[in-house]
Image (cartoon, rainbow, N blue to C red; front, side, top):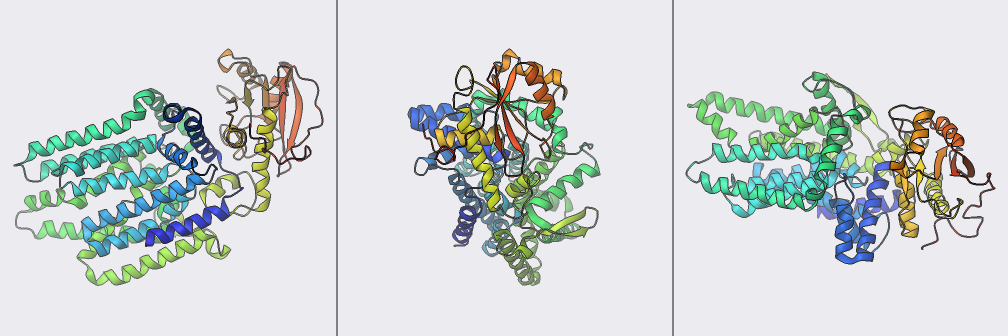
Length: 575
């Protein structure tokens, strides 16, 4: 009943706060993948769908693929959020299952409430990225591991492996969480009764086989591009744009991961409550070992327990995230959602604290629900508090990531989109309209190079508009300021046969607020003019800037006829 109620709240929020408003760069790209999968199914049947799913590397396929199946019944851009809401329910139920195994049904329900109403669950239910399904399947894997009784029960062992495979299909960086599950499973086998160790080792092998087979459905064809992507963005040259450069074993890296977890996933009140629960659990375990007649035996018994297995998965995942300076968006969320079920275990010893802790969790849940619903600006505003050793962190916040990403470049209310933001989706549709028209000497451009790295209008958002309104994929490529932000570099990219020598180019009148590495628009335009590109159209943007469309060998600029001037709404042409 709680899952259904929260699902209804999230459906209401998405329908009222995302309809007609812009997506950030990642959301637009992932939604475009789902539409491509749907078009593959519509045009080529199951085989066309399968081929479309296989050709989106290096992005993990699961969420867009499931979204594409929903689009069969109702094509659009909001349907993907319905899939996320379903994954939110799955995460909540898995959290209950873990908590119930560790501390009983009542405390399991308390842990599920904390997970379902956490800041991260609200954020990632309402932002179309891969964090929520990754967290759901990691929790499912841990729950199945606990139900397997140390890999003694075969079906649950296989379910654990299959869940790991689905987690890998949900997000490629989730490979960071696999070692923790493997180590936890191995310890449960080695530290529990030895008389049936060989059947349990066989079940561990079957679990590994199940995970491998599930993941191989996509990684078999895409493994090398994924490896290149993860190493480049996780440890290579691109990582510098997504986090500070600290030693992996430094206090700064340890603190950075904790800060991300608190800021995006838990907020200070829930984080402090979890910390207190884990601290109390640690004290209980230390006292049990101290007071035991055979301390070594007691220590091994505790290490063979379910709670220690969950701790291993969370700690190993945390350590893996520390190894890269790329903080990512939602990277910490899957392991953060394992902590509430673990923290409630201490309440089995300190039963007198169960009632006040329950009241506090309910109060935190109510506060997060009100703040994230955007029904009162005073509650949704981010407020910080000083946390020892970590600095200022939010104790309440109702600012969705999807809105915050846009607000880094586009002014407006921090907790919601406003009516003027609708102009960005209209500009996307107008530009997609234009790029499909015969604007060049040879008709519609066969390839369009984008110079800007805008947070709202990008190759992803324009490509999404083209697919949504025309069911046609636009041939787009992105210019990059590497090896240098120079005229010579952009001239080379505009004449590089590898790119197919794009005959059309899109720039903006200002690169202010673009995401790094920033492309200087003037330098691109100088290079374009020297190559014979001419400015043919300009499209005004809601913030006063403009999009500039350049075509090689075109006639001088003409007055642009907007979609509205032609007497039809932008993007209304379907074919």
